[in-house]
Image (tube, rainbow, N blue to C red; front, side, top):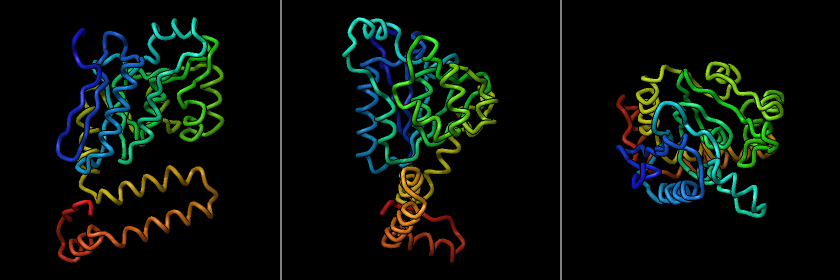
Length: 257
């Protein structure tokens, strides 16, 4: 793997694809990977042609095994060492993000997936936040993101026991949206991403904003945010195109304006 990119970034049409490329290391997160991921996420926000983002990993065994053990060893010696965050970068992406969980997503690996808006898992994958077993707690968003996705009770069970669950159980509790055979994972996710990319991009971003920010607000505040974002959409060219396409019984051609 030496000399190869640790993250592969590609664009197909309106869909951006991020692939963590450290299969020999369990696609573990270290400082270099987190910094490169942050740079890519920043570039995505500046690219008006990107409407949907897919995040996956190389190989079939791991989406990400978590924080790189070598880095954990250094952290044990240097208690003030800065930790490599990946979730902040993903959470900062304006466009919808789909995680294609090709293998086990453990510890910080699951935290990366939790930062995405949708999650599709291969049926062979396992998911968990086992940090408590090593005397640690999730620190890259797990204690905050998991309860927001599956509810407080299930999140507490997974975090406090370190329990690792199957992809099927993850789907049953709402941790992932769908479970598919490994060979069907990327075709399924790409089909979802391409279908979403044909929607009005401004509406996609506003819908994501309403969902994400609304969770931090009271119901009254959330309803006000939703109404404000809806009104903003009335000023866009895409709104006019959507109405015309409906009246003309054709597929709309949105431009993101």
